Length: 66
Image (cartoon, rainbow, N blue to C red):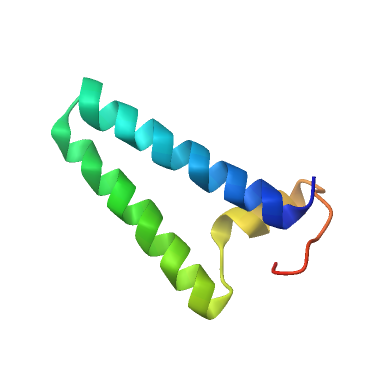
């Protein structure tokens, strides 16, 4: 799996986790979803993604975006 796909899969998993936490634990977990969305938006414009840097250090092969 390339780095790009790994970042997308991780972001999707985090969004789903934050929705589950919001529904079953506490409504304020919605801010976790907002944080993830804001991070995705800024990485689309800047190319800076902390998750991509971590995955790259773990040895995931590079993709075209990161």
